[in-house]
Image (cartoon, rainbow, N blue to C red; front, side, top):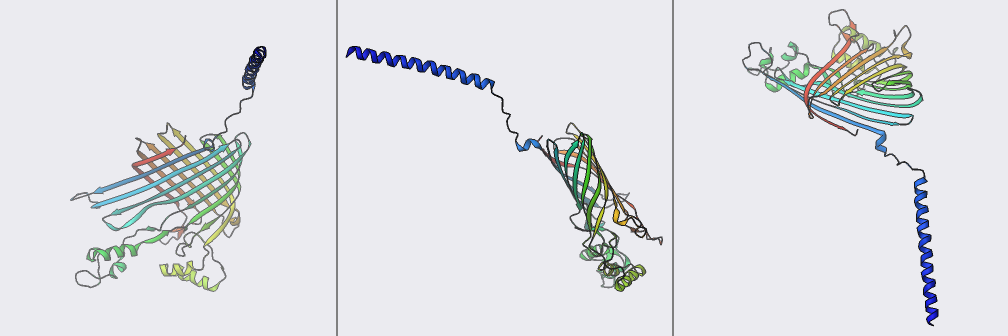
Length: 384
């Protein structure tokens, strides 16, 4: 029995020794395999392909005069806000850039006791591209332009408008704004306003297909020989000003409305004429768009865009051709983390938008300019 126990113990010890050697050998083999196996790269997170940027600002300005010999409004206040947001995607041969610009501002002055809109703009861009060679992409570009609210030309009330309100002192027809009550004075200024724009009046939509050339990270140019979209003017009062055509030019009622308006350009005649004009116009043509973007140390940012469009459908002698050129510039200079200086300029030339000279020489097609300079609070977010 004792010999059997000793033999069994020896067998167990031998087995454990053999197992330990085998385990050690297997562990060593596993380490060698791990060291020679190819390294699997970590899967990129979706955010690594996206560049997100948000820049918002709120600017205020005001003046106050009391017994000031040089004159001026007793007081004035202006407030303006804007948002410039980007969401850009880039992976391998594909890019997708999106930009939204929102601007809105108003002012109030003691000389005009009504709230006046000073700035209003909605601009959405989206561009998708696929690489076909070094710095070249086939691209599809969509953009939308409009404004939030009604915009006016704030004219001084005429004698006829003032006379339609009673003199606060004796009830006779007033001859001067100072004779009106405060509420009637506000109404007189509102009556004198001339509507110039509204939500979707006008609005521009475009879908452009073509080739995008991006030789550097600060410049790109799109050439789109196939560009289609709509010009929308929902307000009948504005359709004439933005060159909308008649639903039926041979309609005798439309021709009479046009003759009445040409003879007496009153608002009532304009409304009648506008009811015969289309609310939208389809365009099909070619477009060239150039974008410039310069950023220095996250303190100074300059963007500029030039867009030129011509319509194939209006290239006959009767229409005289149609073209539109827009040039937008924006400068953001961060003085501190939360204070910035902003400058914005917008230029537009549209051969369909015509303005009356009011001097007997008829209508003409002007170059339209708008500039805004402000300093105020700013807030910026970016993921890179």
